[in-house]
Image (cartoon, rainbow, N blue to C red; front, side, top):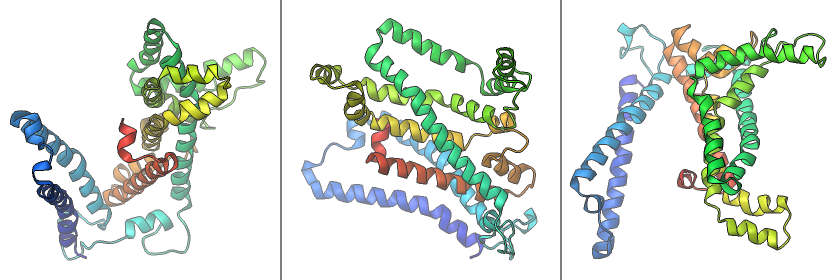
Length: 339
């Protein structure tokens, strides 16, 4: 398929989807007749309705749809000099995705082990960091939502937020200093006799994983807190009065109620971790394999934007699969995790 036809299909698809939704809504209102609820403009007034439609529409089109469509279009095009774009050689191809799998656009003799390993390692470590953040945040979120007084809650919130007044780059370099062979952690462990000689935490990626887990901790914390805070305290008190042990209360009362918050926090932490770039570049060791620096290299080192777009879309698809998997596991609909 020539790129001009492909662009017509890709960029024409979103307006068709929007038009289909409008037709469905218009058909539904006609079917309900007088029983139909007031429309969007009638409920909000035309000034507010116009502002919302224009603002949300521009945001959606220019910040979400157009960039995504451009990346999809680019990922299927071959690497050509700019004068040849749209020319007779500019046909849609799968060679960028083929390169991700086999490390070559012409041969399938061997797998692209380096890029595949980096991709699956990134996904796996992102899942581990998501679980780790949940284990760290759940007890504190429960304490904040159900146990702490208002004064204690404000104090804990301040302690949680204050470290994030420091920007991400500075925090990453601070972690590099802490986990270095001459850093505070190694010096302390050697001083108290736990280690005979310093451990290279940077080469072992311990600093990278710790930095990533710390960077997105609040995403999980506030999602859990918001969900648990809506739980009626009387349910917990009634369970205690009936003799339920603490683990029974958490397993059968708190955790089921907090499912939307857990799913929301998990998807946020996973997607931000998998797409992190600064922390892997600063905290990664010399042999670190993280997928986002590879994507960055495709764009700015190899100057192959078509291949970079394909790699970025592969990561996006993996994140979408994770979100759908989380919704399936927790038996939630997409709208419920935004409650």
